[in-house]
Image (cartoon, rainbow, N blue to C red; front, side, top):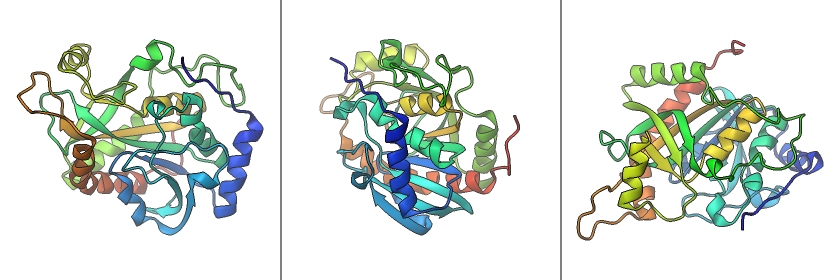
Length: 288
């Protein structure tokens, strides 16, 4: 049985009030750090740290590698709100609660959402430690009715039927490409597929996911993208490839979450300068 929740505008506002007690500055950029990538938050200047447990209605992550706290401050000259870790559907949260922070970001004044995640590499050319700029996605849970927008629609956030033709902002992607080329950071571009997890994929599932056009696969991010686009945020999303998926298993070959965390040590030194560069080169305002 799927878990469903509906949050009122007043409940979002309660979270906003709690966060503003930590910092009155209006964040322009929201940043969600996935498994093993939370160390980027250490670079934030004048940080104010707020555990999720102190924010009304915020979901709490139980997964290793997700610190479970907000950090507000300045990164690359931009006022930011950083989520060190996210909640996941497989932890038992509804998708409405998983994506609760995204609408709170919107109400706080965030304009740009930068999402990172740990993903398995479906594309045979990818290697552990590579970065993948997400240019499109296949939301398999959403195709079978697991969508954060199911339920009453609040028109003050967005339309009942939001368009997802261009989910990932072209201007932000152009900036990311330019920074990657300038800094010598290898950056693939690909299609991200979401599964609910928490099991890793079978070889047959990997072959299927490759066959339908996937380059990377993971257990997060797409609900956040859907809600962000619903409420008008511009989205940039980057995957850190933590392992090459197994389509033809060898004896004793397994995938473990420890591998994901270990790969973060390779990915973060590449991801951090890319994100800093994107933030430094955000235009004063975006073209309509």
